[in-house]
Image (cartoon, rainbow, N blue to C red; front, side, top):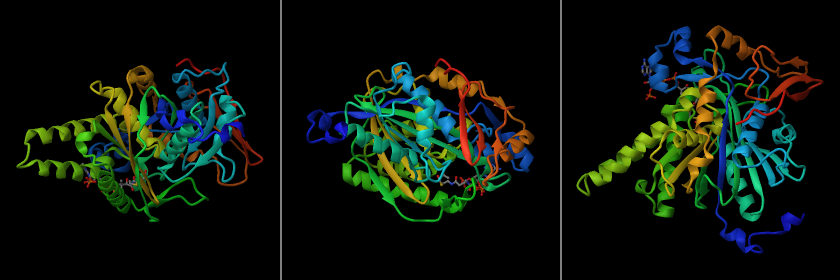
Length: 429
Ligand code: CAA
């Protein structure tokens, strides 16, 4: 309990500490499908998928990968990028949270499996947190509060999901798989999180997943309308609470279930700003919207190739923006809109730190995406159906699709318990 007794009021350093994201890392499986090929197989005009939906490729997770193995791979990278090493025992990490809506057990937190695989000290609080795609943000903001209260500690946040709607469903084109991991610390090197945020919650039936299936159910059109509505509400209130306008932001990143979704919500705000422009300060007012539109596009580069990773999608968008926009500078404010069906929407922000580019490992991330193997659609359909059953029977995962970039696999389910294995040393990142 020694740590727990220190709180913000007792510790003046904590009250003033700048807390935020020290490192940010992606893991996505080494297998993907081409969505033009999927469109042809489904008898759909490929332009619908690539332009109407805005997706080019989709990550495919074989049965030996789940949120634990993907999360562990992303977490090890984030820890290495943050300067932590396995040899040193990662002893600074006092909190590990996994945000996910693809949980592998209704009771035991996936964070405990990850904790074991990556070798964290036992003196660490481990938990899983859920609110659909908002789970990653819930984890990040909880970690922020934890580090504010315990500034000598770090928190490890994982947002991992496998988005599954089913073969030949309207949602199939918006599937994907992957994990984002973040180390949250005092004096972070990537982005300081600002304390003000605006959240809005309402119980609605736009998207859900009953406990007996791994495939989500969605009221597709309604869910997109709710996303737009939630963003409109939180953006308006955030502006009233902070006095900030679009001009205060270098870029806005959105939860991206598919890359056209964020812009559906952003466009009305951009258009309204441009209308205000008329009769006032002319092109000076137009300039932020051109820049914001362009940076929105850069935030979607990775999602176009990975697809929806639910709780991690917003952070995949942030990584994409940081890796692909060389014009961003220290001190730039980035707005982040998180949406989790069911539903919660929250808008918050961060400020880029001096030297933030040195923490990014852009070449590694691009190489990971470029070196993936393309699956034919027939193979993808077989992989899609080769999954851990929702039942008590034993199951051994595939050995045909092993990803050499991830040292962790789900080996089998035996006696209703999941058995994970580490196949070798960590790759050097
Ligand atoms: N060429 C170019 N564009 C075309 C086209 C063609 N030949 N044919 C259609 N399009 C366009 C349509 O005009 C439409 O564009 P707009 O959205 O700008 O109007 C777009 O392609 C999609 O067409 P449809 O609306 O007809 O697509 P659909 O009915 O097949 O469903 C979907 C699309 C609702 C997104 C569906 O994929 C789905 O249900 N996805 C899962 C739910 C989802 O992602 N919801 C998002 C909000 S909820 C959330 O964010 C949480 C989460 O992660 C799930």
